[in-house]
Image (cartoon, rainbow, N blue to C red; front, side, top):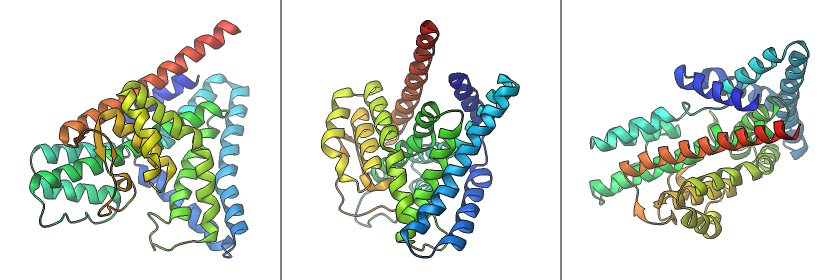
Length: 320
């Protein structure tokens, strides 16, 4: 049931992309603002209570609904799985930006590529240095886009997939999606409309997601290594993951960059591009061709994940 649910949800998302901001981000933002306004007393325990209400309650409800529907009909439970996965995972939340940036780079339209990159970050595109040439600007944009795409593929696909498989029903998918959002919105204050720092109130959200994300980031990194350049991916993972302040992002980026044989910018995945930062990966400067290679890497990693689920399903049937 899990494999079929994932496949159908991914197909639906490709055929009819979900308006992610309208149906997922805006409702989660409204919930986060509601709880913050009523529970934020500036203490860590207030943030802990708000996180439990925002994350565990919906995750438990998703699991309870699944089992209630399964008691009535397995088909209804399967449809519930598909619906929840359709809301919580998918490529189309970010793939259109990546595709449009790649096309702009191939056409040599750097201003448009920068504009798209800025829109993807949710902030104005960072102006490149005046003393660099067009090729270097193109490389900077490409490596920033690849970095963001690798992290987005983890957060919107592989992380959700791992938690969905590990927890009963669709509760894992709900848990990961909301915890990921709150880690940014409360914990790191990225994407907040007021740009405010929540301090102690958001500390638990950031820490809780780091714990939840511990296994998924390593599963994603392992997948990139297996379907890409394994030796370089493992080497970069072991030696460069700590160059990113967020350990989860660092592991995904280091492994992905090594698997692609390209140099990436660690801090390009969050909302800002910093100057004079250390690169991760090995090999060539990123360009539009490497962006296409990144697409292939992500899809191969997804196919590997689905194949493993299929083998586990067969193993379960054989042992029954």
